[in-house]
Length: 138
Length: 116
Image (cartoon, rainbow over all chains, first blue to last red):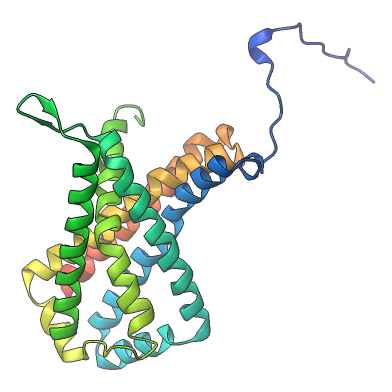
């Protein structure tokens, strides 16, 4: 026992209530927020998977074949199903947020939210169709 | 340093978020589910490789992989702050997140450059 105990004077700005790491489970809107933020993990997972596919294609037909059969294993099928749900959740929340993040003015009047959201969904359909067309027809 | 490039990071975040929202669902549906489950035929090696030789496809794949990685880095960084309350690790988390995105981008660029 060498040192005197150290006391900190009362300071209102230092007062922090401790919050549980699970604070976001108590309310639906908070849970939605954290799930939306977590979609980024699944986005990164699929970006990494695409990079892996690129690597397989660079290495040749055998590596590409191994890549394709690896995706057919139960582990990857389950993972990819989860990834699909989260990526879908990301897309829907992202499109619905755009009118709040980006205000479009036409002839001095603010374009209605539904128009911007609708344009996003229309673009989504067109782009998805184009990707499917290229991947299926080569 | 981090404060100076924050506008750029937000720009990459929103660009990557838009790319992921528009393009990832169809890619995951096809590559992750429809092809492995046999609902649809995946492009054979020759077709996929021929696609890759086109400069537009290379640019497309670079955008498809790189921007969403930066989107993840930015969003995940703040998820860690809010979710796990790791405010004291700000610098370390930022370096790890953006560093991983940079590494992925560099690997993508190298592969796309190198493929013949």
